[in-house]
Amino acid sequence: MSPATIRLAELTLSHARHPAVHHLSGSFLPGSLTAVVGPNGAGKSTLLRALAGLHPVHEGRIEGAAGQVALLPQAATLDRHFPLSCLDVVLFGLWAEGGAFRALPRDAAARARAALAATGLTGFERRPVGSLSAGQFQRLLFARLLLQNAPVLLLDEPFTALDARTAADLLTLIRRWHGEGRTVIAVLHDLDLVRAEFPETLLLARDPIGWGATAEVLTASNRLRARMMAEAWDDAAPPCDGRAVA
Image: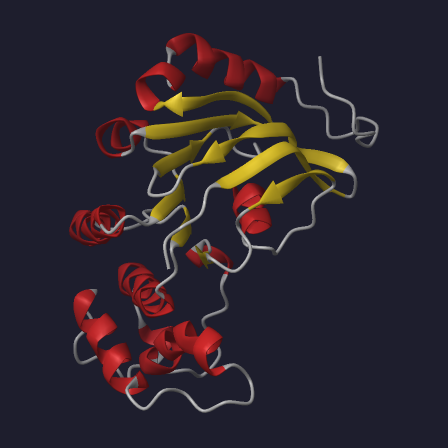
């Protein structure tokens, strides 16, 4: 499946009617590689969850995302105490093929082992998830993405708390996906990495500050504006009424 253009039109996302993303319009083109950056609390993770259909739209609309995305959530938000093996977790990537009431494909286990091998986890099939280091667990989540085989990949802070080798290996996978023509959208904090590897950037501070070529978006003036907007946020402000912020 080739990715479709994902269009956002006056998109507002909220928590308890307080805006997390405010009046965002633009497009993620097929095969694009985009970093989403901004201050803490800027709505970056909320945007990815909305693209994945996991957060409701308050105002505006999202077009083209349904049925074609796979989400890598922040590893820190996942409960690793449930007694699952690494192979079990990777096989969840085939949920769309098997669902709740259909058997998995006959080659499911072989495909899962291949995904583990591709992420450097050969021999980890029976290892309990709770025994993995942070880097190993992130490799495992990337292996699950490989099995999902989605045309659009949403990555929420994929390199947080990783050693240099793991980060480099996973960045190689992202380059591979981009080379295959998939759309990749990643929430990132390392601006040097963004400048080096991501041609497109969306800078958010709840409101969009810039969206386009990375060099044009990550200017000193835009980054200052984002920081000043973050410092001015008032969590006690009235709920969003759908009007644009001046």
